[in-house]
Image (cartoon, rainbow, N blue to C red; front, side, top):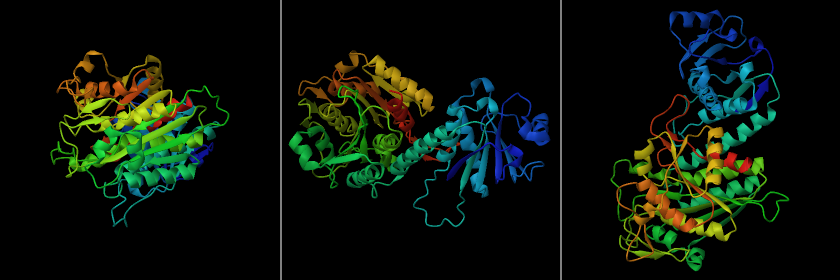
Length: 482
């Protein structure tokens, strides 16, 4: 989709549709004309969030249609709401075969953050999870999105394009079925992305991981015929001082999670292809950062495995030795994400990373705690936590800090090893984070549990059903605003 900016007066814009916003409880904006004023007067349109009304052949406009999108209460309007509103416009107009959409940015919102959000919303809304449909004769496309605004928004629009396309890249990876994206193929996609955008990419294979002593990661992988991979993608800025902070972005990359010997129920198991959403998110973030060029070095690590119940699969009761040297008793093979992340975390520290941030579809317990609305956030460092929360707010990604008190570590004690891989049924998301903290030790670290937010169970007015690409924008902001 081509993105352009115009300062033309809105009546002169030639497009398939001119889209504008109207706020709840207010009079119609001038661009809405008598048509919108009439709708407001009769109550056919009220301006509530995501509400829409469409007029064909609007009088006084060169655009063929006029679409009004409800923006809700003005007092609650943020760039995040702008992103959604623009997405709603695209999702409404695209099925109607509107090839060019012009989005009118009101003068009061003619700011970089709102312009960026509008463009991001359009690009994200344009994503379709239909790659494997063979009959697409009726598929419609939006070829161009015009931001109608007064001001210089070239850099904001370019950043929006880079970030949103990176988020869609993540969504494409997450959407891939496991027979088309195993650990080796995920590594190939990472290599191709790195080569395209000038990043360094290294992939550790099973033999190299065995030499290093990554027993936690290899234990998860041993039940599958598909070999594991530890994908490492590096960004190094020009002229960065030797003592510069070095950010690690670590993403869980389980390309299919059957649960292993502790096998999952069959209902919903088909979605376990998205258990690599954290890994896909850090790769998407690196794709964006390669173009935006933050001032600090950033290294992404994606431990990629399949968790399968084979004749060689690890069993409950097994004890493995992690890269850190700590031993782990396996009580449940479906608590595998924390095992592969433990070795990736240790390796990130060995690479000299000074700050760690991980994203993982780690626990069903976080969904019980927060539903499908907020990412659960855990940290051992208030300063880094504040940075991540600020980055998330600016990105419009909802996150909520969770406790990580020492009492939860007590639930992971075992007489047979240094730590066991699960606690009891209570506070499961917290004990999973406490397990990771054991390997983080004193390094500043933030853990994002995205199990409830990485996959949209139902379509939203501004996004289709399927992968969300959550945390890409937050990770980009974190690195860029360091």
